[in-house]
Image (cartoon, rainbow, N blue to C red; front, side, top):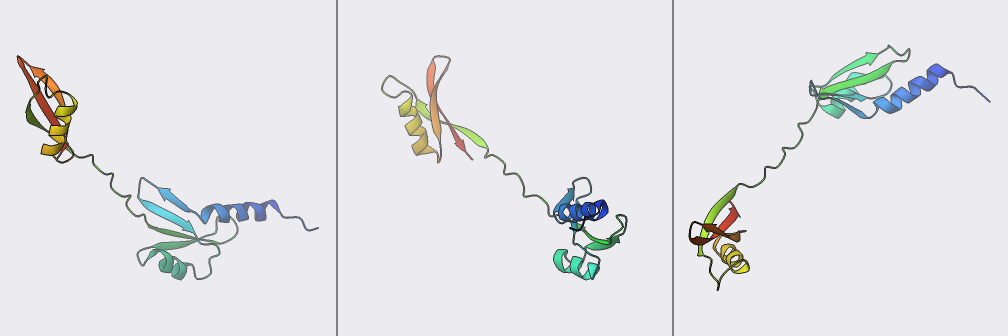
Length: 130
């Protein structure tokens, strides 16, 4: 049985690790290990576009093609909808709680309501996305 030398094993593990995308968040550059250096620049540009840059890294004793390219910007985080306030009249013994909520839903798209006392008035206050 043939023994695998530690250098060959290390290089094999490095190639497997480097074949995934490595992101450097501070410079927004990504690196992709493409295996051997044969046609390195052509393969790099074909995979990641004409602005990508390739180098043949010899630091491990075996030539390894590394392709550096501009990472895609992450999708923007959706902003929560702005909440607006409105009114739907007065709350009373006949129309309280769920009645106020129903009135707000009818008056404002996506609206919800609650009764709130302001001084001597019991108001139906609505909140809705705007």
